[in-house]
Length: 392
Ligand code: ATP
Ligand code: MG
Image 1 (cartoon, rainbow, N blue to C red):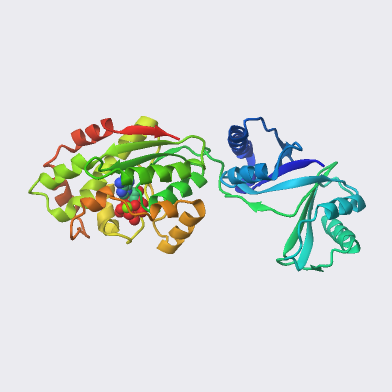
Image 2: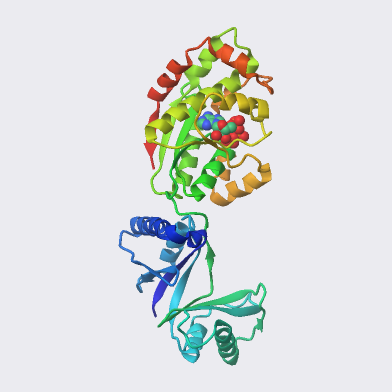
């Protein structure tokens, strides 16, 4: 029996004149990721507003699971299904579905759901009723329930073929990866910035990462934790680059200037990080910087402090989590697989150099005056030069 994967896309379908551009990106992403994982070619046919990938008999259940793990992380996909080929003749199709029914021990209710090509002589509702009747006739012994049944028999009628399955897998939705320009994400080892990167990737941004760490003043744990997070996120886009910037010397330099009050240090770190991120953006021809900032969450995130931090750079900032509740952020982090890594404790550069009582209401004029003790331009150049890059 024929096997295939059907992929439905969501928002991309609303793109009118630009739909082809987004579909091309989606097709390339699916093809590249599957072909790399399986070391063979896959042919994606675009038909009736969806993608169809024919599979051969050798495609095992383990292969399905492997392919599902890949498709489940590709932006633009609304849902995907591993389907069996069937007949357009309802009686024959009923028999084919019957012969493929999964274990029904935990199933009390079911329904049939059809989508059909316009050229077919029957309507979807009629086909649903008739296939349902075929199954009942063969003794399916379960109640029909239209809303939230335990089992849905999904059927898609194409012009000369039907496809059916008992499971529809939800996708990530959003817009195709790399469809919307390049951004640099300031990435810590915490919970928020990985979620911020994910959110922007989901809108089509190609994300390049930069992490500031205090190794060798601290141990390597923060660097490694950040690297592990970027690795998880790299599954969601084509190719991924991480800049690791040693930041400890700058933090020590600030600590060493007696005229700079301890409490303003965190704001000065953030300003310098932003300057370096801006330089990386220019080098990479990226059009903005993403941060995981969240209004009011920590001391650096008051309106006053954020005003002063943002003053250090002119580049557009993208802060997709700014008004999220922490629980909402954690929910996403758990779903995308970063939470378990982020929650591990590590020696993070900011905490190590954190003042006891950080400033909550920084003043921009005072802050600029404090910075006059350091050559910020020279420091930002030096930090950029010290960066190492890793590719995923
Ligand atoms: P996160 O959970 O992302 O670490 P946070 O709640 O701890 O965020 P802050 O520590 O104030 O908040 O950091 C705010 C933002 O600044 C982070 O979301 C991140 O974008 C950026 N940032 C903080 N520390 C670093 C770092 N070491 N390297 C790169 N970016 C950083
Ligand atoms: Mg943090």
